[in-house]
Image 1 (tube, rainbow, N blue to C red):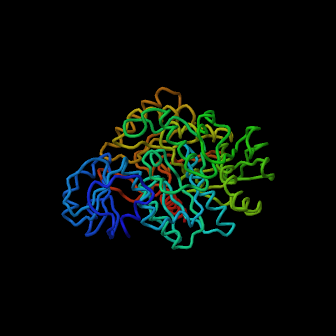
Image 2: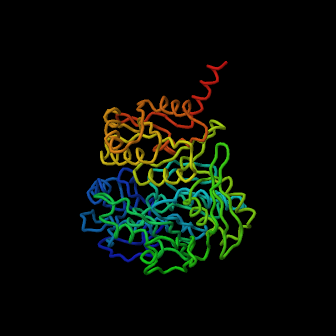
Image 3: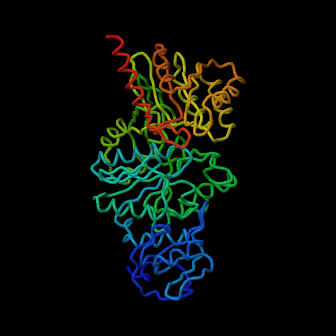
Length: 490
């Protein structure tokens, strides 16, 4: 492809060289540069691409995209832009032939609910006959291909590559999670979302390597409403006015508020042997009753968001209801049947805020006992351990403290930190370092009417110990425990 064609939608200055040259590949990784490549100098958290200019020129790079002056051989074209990450998004879109123009694109942002809503949307649209690609925290799904995720929102080049593969695989649309980091780092530039969804916002991701404060976090999230045609926003969020300030999209809302375009009314908790759910009546832009086999008020919000999007795809009421009943997300309030007497579920809640929200939700179902099994990651803040211990001590009837990803730390030392938090409460606890043994204890000591939650690992299928990842999937552990029990009882 001609370099001039790749730069068509950008403002730039040509410092030296010729724009009328063919580019063999586009890359931002100096290790992948080949003869005739366009190399984009990205300033990352660990390395600055500008430093690798001599090496990539030696390898035969034909052109460079830079933010700052660099020294390059006379035959190498140097293009200077204000922001190379922003430029990369548009260059990548052009390189892959603007695949987003051939798809209906749905972007979902928010502090909570992104992952579940993404899978709900995929389930509903596929049930209605669409072929849907997905990019999210857990994985990217392109036709029959599943790619484990490294970031919630990949680099812009990867996004455009995925979009291109989705078009090739015959997808009609793509639903993707959009993180605040992804928006801040311009990963979702280069195209306009057909639908942008804002689920909610709470203080999170604030720290040295993320957002300096809540205002910055909110401002980054709200960028989505300037990058979409239709914006769909939770009307109940206390920061609603700030979220929609300066939006450039057509706006729709959902929630319990009478001002919402799509409203939930008459919510009821429902449950049976081994499962928990919720029902409500939908009114406003649509009118019918909804029942979901996922507990909690936040499940209503997630389903409302999914319905609000799918309304634009003319999905029938029948297809929406059918899909919501079967929509499941690995590791997000994922119920695993182990007994008719009590309910067991797996959830990714791995910080105090998420654990508090989860346990508070499950308390509303008035269980005989609420049992919480969790551990904390090594090489991470001790404060998280104290806070999670205190939350579980206050809200669970029994806490089973175990190991998560100890990394380079002694699992017992992490457990001792969690106990510091629990000691501030009157909560009962047991400690069992081995996670399989801890899960077996939870299953073998389950009482009628209990809700047992395995928290912290969620979709993860490994345990990280001293720099190495070992296979460990809680679903597999549960199966093994049940099979071992059968063997013993024979």
